[in-house]
Length: 424
Image 1: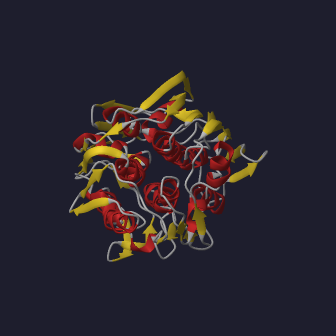
Image 2: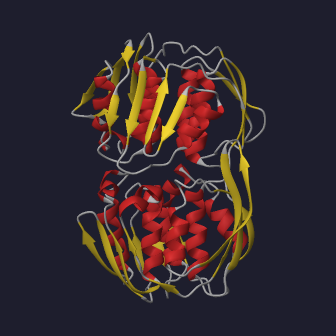
């Protein structure tokens, strides 16, 4: 599907409600499946990736049904059943890595598969620590499909070489079913939705800086209200800042401090953004954001902030093209291991529309402010975040751009275009 995007000449106006956080939706259905009793998940994500997690939980014997379009009722015995066929994770790395931790300690065998893109993504980062716990996992040179022989697991103290919420969560979920105390230490604190939700569901979990420990635990069912996804909000934040005359309000945005790197970067750049009505919902910080067109300046993005905005870096690159001076992104080498090599792809595609951008081994350098040109076809590389970032870029190009294979945006954000049209 080709999507043509034209320059917005009047500004973005109005307010929208940001759809459900995908990271929290994944965890909500998985953790509710491990809890004995009835859990109610309100505002479950409509994105395909969380739906992959839902279908796998159902294939493991969990009764999970929608009460309405976004309210999911999960009734579980707290004991998973052996699946009758391979478990399809679709395009979701979160599903595959977190389910690996859950399945490694079960009393049955299972196979996790994925689509062509997911089958290229590195899984050694979870296979290695799970193997140290006693797990038996076969793969194709560290890639899916993963064949998991359920084992009794033992606790480990694991120093993770990278700050990754998926790796950390995988190990902690295995630790729920392991003998002893399992501890994960990261070089920087990655997103902590797993820790917050496990605590909310009464797991025996403790945190200390960049370390988190969990002991064998039985989770308790809960009502979980899923807040809006700040990664989804990032596209509207960027657009509101760079499209002249824009003034928008984004409602129900998750403001977990491990996810708000995008807000810090906007402040570094001099962006006009304001947090309204901040509150706590199901253990997570939530609020509304007011975003207005701003005169931006370049900045350096590196070190500990990277795990707090790793998914937002493609649209940050678009933002940086409209900022005065130089923006440098480094320490972000893990971008090369996403649905695409996001460093190479961001550089290649933004150059097509006239961006002054160069590639680093672990990031990129952007010189601005640049009037982006149109009359270009931009490739998504089967990567939903690139598809949505190119849409935002198209709003400030002097002539229309065409985004090829735009349907990949629906993997994570099927409401994306309708919400933008509400603001146009």
